[in-house]
Image 1 (tube, rainbow, N blue to C red):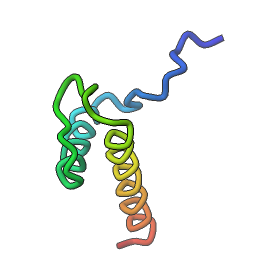
Image 2 (image 1 turned 180 degrees about the vertical axis):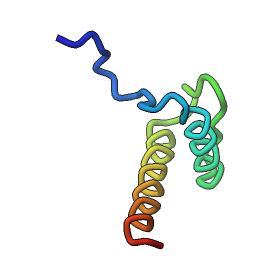
Image 3 (image 1 turned 90 degrees about the vertical axis):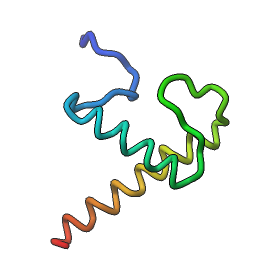
Image 4 (image 1 turned 120 degrees about the vertical axis):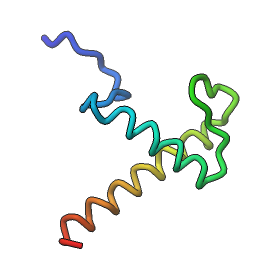
Length: 70
């Protein structure tokens, strides 16, 4: 049995952590979510979820463009 965590909240490529953090802050700014570095327990689940959901949407759009050769 593996000794890894069951949490899916980790960066698979550690070198990408800084870029993902920057991307998260950019998306939060676009959506008007007052996200800060560190603790964000003052934000609602909806606000936090909207940032993550929008990040996924943008990553899928980028991948689709790349796969289409654009």
